[in-house]
Image (cartoon, rainbow, N blue to C red; front, side):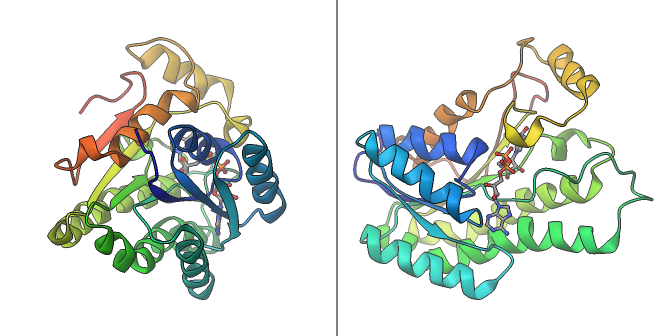
Length: 249
Ligand SMILES: NC(=O)c1ccc[n+]([C@@H]2O[C@H](COP(=O)([O-])OP(=O)(O)OC[C@H]3O[C@@H](n4cnc5c(N)ncnc54)[C@H](O)[C@@H]3O)[C@@H](O)[C@H]2O)c1
């Protein structure tokens, strides 16, 4: 489905991003994983290449504008162009369990810088290349917490709400060159980042889903692949909650 598509996946060194990178590479995409976790990112690329997949790694710090520019430049040079960008990298763990009164300003700023500004900077640097592709695709990874207002995580929830709004504005600006911009809003998904989420939050999700089971990274790969594909060329500015029916649009 994605044969020959040249795609960057941010935050691909582990968790959902790793599954997206592997899933789209198995469909024929040429993938660059970009992450702040250099050792892990390199190791993932080595593993996937050993499996015959076309995957490279470049270091990226979403909080540093120069790093974003360098990363996109290196990736595009190596891929020979750019057809897709998955903005998956984010501060997604280690910040929960705090009320809005308890969240500190430094953590708030860091979450906004990485999750919101980082998504914009990556898309800004990628924009000329995606526009040149004439069928460019951006998939921004938000979270269904932004749709139901999950408590005790307000900085993260707000950042994902901003990603949703930003994606709609980006879709209108980039549509002039046939670039689509859509959002995936996953539900609570089992991976390294959610190992520490309290049992009762997992139960809340399982009981609230139309499909009453845990969610795995592989549950999301199909939706991401579809949004990157040629079949999704007239679908833009949309939010797709992939969460077993916990939140329904
Ligand atoms: N796991 C879930 O339940 C869940 C649910 C909804 C949405 N999401 C979203 O899915 C995406 C992936 O989350 P995950 O659960 O795999 O968590 P994760 O922490 O494993 O993945 C986030 C990735 O982003 C990278 N990253 C963090 N800061 C960075 C920076 N400054 N520069 C570059 N890379 C950086 C991390 O190193 C990591 O590889 C995130 O956007 C998250 O908000 C996850």
